[in-house]
Length: 260
Image (cartoon, rainbow, N blue to C red; front, side, top):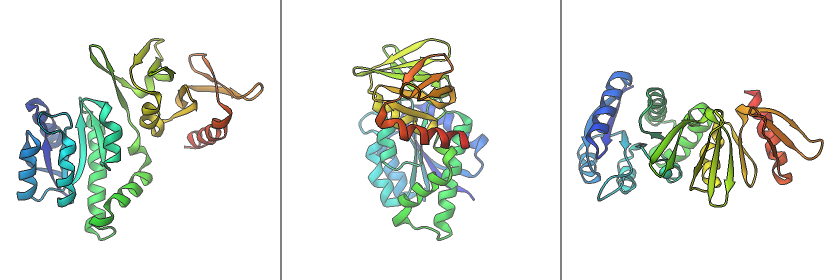
């Protein structure tokens, strides 16, 4: 099926880039409008039949979150597109279909569009309705578990930000109000954000918080033993303690992860 979409972004390059990506790789998306501000988008939502909005967040005057009440009125779904991952948790709580970091990856874009199309089909086929769309979206994400995973993460630094593939991350340690990422190439990156934020961002992508100060990437788990307390060993030969209160949850997570 074809869904009608609106692109909202204050940067001309981003608007054009997303338009051409959708035109080339997502034939089931018809672009009904392009807006460079929230004010423009509000007008287009009133006059057009918009199913899906690709919404930038960091824009002057009004940010993308200011458009959400209007999207609820028109029953339009939203996919956030932004260069800054500090908005990710707020976007998730806003029941967005997806959250894509710039520069936009074609495969991630196609997966997000597939989710939007599937949700729209459910609505049209009367398997759901507009009032319970958020509940249905939650069920959709549970059924399409792979689409919940993030492939890249944006780590801010003093010069801007660095984009990493999550597979490059071996583990993350808390250091006071900072988080330190340890990578497969033996490098480390310190970020001025709390570990809890990254736990919520990474937990659907094969990561497990094993201690109040430690998150590990299960992809890099090589061994664990409970001989002298539960200890895990990772692919870089580092060893980490699993706290007693997290040990049961960790073992369940490991069993589930390696059953896939």
